[in-house]
Image (cartoon, rainbow, N blue to C red; front, side):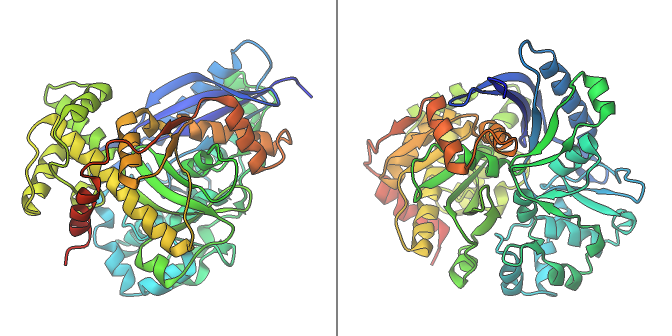
Length: 494
């Protein structure tokens, strides 16, 4: 066995993508940036899309760059992406159009249209998935309702990472953790939710087999190997949903912890052995997504740093270019608790003038309207932290036990102000790191697939060996409980 296992993680987020080389020496995993690139929606006359052909070019560029690195050759490559979006192939395996972006407005009103045919209770009983209009189920039903020619032509449905895996290997399949995000999968029957799909006239023949995370997809196609110089490597399935890979890299020592994957979206959850599909989990709109090692992620999606990202984008487009560090410093100096908002309000879902939307929300809910950039960003960060507390309390109620500690992983851990706000709001310690949790979990599951790591908990021991974990203790808590009472009035108005 080689002294060092070299694997390449391709991690696609909603704002950017990255190729990261993982070097595992048997005890520690070192990560090295190979290539970073922008990602984002492309608006066409028919709606909002992903530019998957450019992303495919970035994959091949990343492979070529990694192949040129000095040292031992690559053993494998694994791809993870955001959830819910998908591609359709025709009977000749050609891509039918650019995949839609989950923020496209074609799903407006689709949840209600679906519920007129199948009740919310029945959908949740079959899928156990949180209701969001961006879910694959409503995207597909929009195509049914609009009599889409693309759906009529479709021979194969593939999630976004599985589209890239097909182009790399020629193997058509969907990976488990990503399939579970679609609201088209039945976690108790361990198969696609066939009765639900048939009830909505979604063609069932397009759905391929499902593969577990931590498995070999197949060898890299010879044409791609020749084009990139990446010879002799396997294409491996990490948890192809980015949060699934990120949770693998939570540096926990034992079960019973809470985790938050923090980025454009924040996902707050716990790790369970079985899906939790109950009246309470339906009422609180929690989700059961597939994890690694036979686990489920019982969790809830929250609109996370998207609020700050979109404010920054809007200000930059209007001549005020500021870094995230500058915005966070402004927020730290701003007055606290100016305005509290529900990050998941429909007003904040789509791109646009986010500062104006936050001000309008404050006015509509009878609160002080934030004026400065610092007040706007601080309002967003405080509200995200309070939504974490709210979600954790509901999570513990349904599980019947407390969760400790809180682990925050992902790019959002770089915002230390949000981490401190989370500790203050929840009144419990918060442990943060690793920043590149998704890439680390991706590489670790590739090591599992190749037989170098035996289990999920062995992988987490590697994470603890491989980097620093920061601890944030509850500090200046003055005003947080009063703010939480105000926040509950916003969240649950009488």
